[in-house]
Each structure stands twice: as C-alpha cells, then as structure tokens.
Image (cartoon, rainbow, N blue to C red; front, side, top):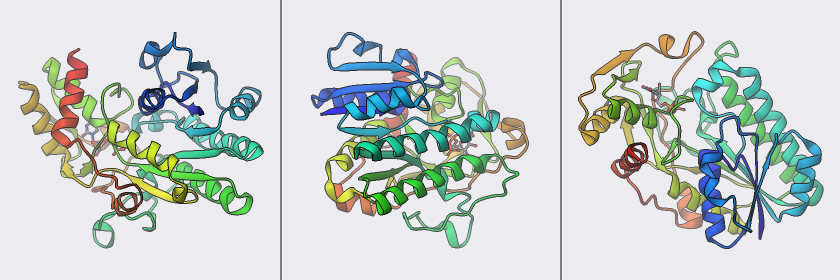
Length: 323
Ligand code: UDP
C-alpha cells in the first residue's frame, strides 16, 4: 500500500508512520512543520519507503499529486493543543476547516479511502447533570458561546465531521472518523498545553507542577500505541466506513491526582501550584469538568482493548524526557 499521512511529522502522525512502515507500507508524509518536527521522523529520512514533503495541506497542486499517488489517506494535520488554539484562533480555524475541505475534495476526486482524525473536543462542555455519563458517539454536543475562543476548535472539528459524513452519504466517499481522546506518549511536546508532558518536564527539573483550576476536573488518557493500533485496524475494517468512533480509554483521573502521581513517579520535590484558568490561558477560556469516552463501538468492531494503563503512560513520558 501507498499511504499518505497529513501531519505525519507530528506526535500522532509520526507514530502512525512508524507502524505503517513496520507493516511494510510505503509512507508519504506531508507536514508544514508548524507544530510537527523533523526530529520525530529523522530516523526514516534514508528509507526507500519513506517520503517527506514539507508543505501546507492547502497547496492544492502538491496535495493533488500525493492523493492521486496513494491508496489510502490518514488526515492527521490540524491545529493542536489548547494553548495554540487560544493564542492563534485564525490559524486554528483555517487549518482545520480549509485543510479538511481540501483533503475531502481531493480524496473524492480519486475516490481514496480516508481516515479523519477528529477530537473529543467536539463533545464540548460535558456539564454536570445529564451529561455526566460516558460519552457515546451519538451524545449531543454542548458548545459554549462563540465569544469563548476555546469552542472554536470544537466547532471546526465538528464541521469537519459534518463535511466528511456528507461526502460519504452524497458522494459515496469511503471515510472513517476517529474522535481521539487525550492521547499521550513519547514525542508529545508540552509546548501547546498538553498536561502530562508539562507535569513530567516540570517535575523532572524541580519546578512547580501547575494545576489549572482546582484540579477536580478529570480526563481519561490513552497511550499512543493503543491509539495507533485502533487507527490501523479501523482502516483495515470495511464495516468502519461511514462511521464515527471514540478512540480512547475509559480509565479516569482527576488532574490533581495526576499531578500527585507524576510527582511520586519522578521522585520529584516539586511543589504543587494552583493557577486560575484566566491566568493560564487568558480570558475567554472554559474547561470541561469531565471527559471520558464510551468505547463500546470500538471494542465491538475491532476488539479494542487499551494495553497501557495510566502509570505506564506516565512512565513512557518520564523515560522520554529523561533521555
Ligand atoms: N492542565 C493543568 N496544567 C497544565 C496543563 C493542563 O492543570 O500545565 C489541565 C487543563 O486545564 C485541563 C487538563 O489539564 O483541565 C487537560 O489539559 P490538556 O491541555 O492536556 O487537554 P484538554 O483535555 O484540555 O484538551
């Protein structure tokens, strides 16, 4: 197979490249290196079956050639990380909406099978009360006001999903949508927000571990290898076409407990520091109190079972940053 990965120099995209090369595929990566890094893929530069194109996915001529040439596409390129989204909203919206439009239009031109990486952000606020249950793929979204910048990302990803489903229904394009929950592992940078690399790096150098809000909010984290396993199995499963899948882990932890675990596992003397959301992200920020997936659909179709638990995930990040 010839496989195209948009955003293939990023954290998730580069791990996907690892796996596809291991499976014997020929891999084409397109990445503008905005948040991706050459370091993530330098080990492949001399491989015959690896090709890197440094460009934006909005370059139609370049993308047309790549899509034409490849058998399958994983569309992973997107603006990532809450910090980046808060700081650069125009870029976020344009990359996510126009980029996906471009890929769908070209995939449809040559009728290529396409995996679209969406995000658990689409569920929105997940308020207390009715929404405290695990999130199912068909659970209603609860978006905040357009004046709260954070929701721009959620809406851009939701629009990507609408567009992908419309291409599937109207034009019979074979698409699969994966809603990725907080994915973690080696190569993830803390630069754009992500909590675990942030906590680990601070703990390792003895700086205060910064908990935003009161730390009672919870998340569920999934190890990168489990996510990649799910993505490649979904791509190989004909019944996945036209469907949306939560890709995550249903083990939950509060951010405060997470901070304590990181401190304990690193043997760090770092202090815990509580910072308001406003101070952390600036005005216009709202957090969700809880976000945990129901992964029954994924389990039923591809027998998905997360292999690495939270301790294993944290340890992998500690090992990576120690190195
Ligand atoms: N968070 C934190 N300290 C940090 C980074 C993040 O307390 O240094 C919190 C953040 O406010 C959120 C959770 O950790 O409640 C997960 O944040 P992340 O940006 O990793 O992902 P999100 O789930 O918000 O997309």
